[in-house]
Image (spheres, rainbow over the protein chains, first blue to last red):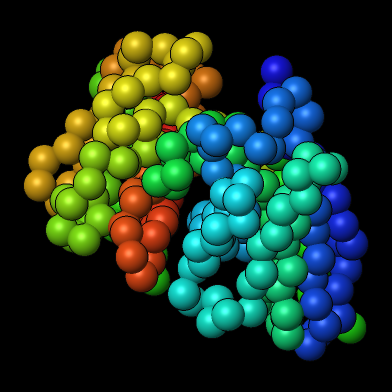
Length: 120
Length: 111
């Protein structure tokens, strides 16, 4: 059974960089059939897609993040990561990693999510 | 403001059917058959309920069905059960610039 687990600091200071890693177990991140994505959810609000990566390194991002987001993949560790620069309180959210089964934004496996708070 | 428009809330009694709409444009919902629906219970991760507009993943009850007409997709839940009470989100592929967009979410209350 495929499992995804987010990890990283739960508290980040304003203007600093948020860094999260998603570890995939029970399957290979190098599978040519799947893509891997990050989605976030501010407290009490809806889901927002952040970006998606293919194992080859191809990436797609939400333009609303204005180039602050970078997603990378480490196939040797079966992990993919998110960096979000110049964070503000508006970036406080539960961050989820997920598998995109089609490459078209259809996420069939999700991590449990990790809350990241931006505060000094 | 979300790219896809959903009603804020819907409700129904046990055994009834409810339909949740998701309205986009010809650049997302109307242009591609890559609409998905997610169920989210409080404090839990979203769960995929429908993909490719109307396909159900293994394990999802056939009480859940999806459809699309023009720029509007719909999720219908028949034979409502108490455990269906949750937030529901639609999502669509949007190609080029936006790529993936979510709806604002709909809270389903089972009366």
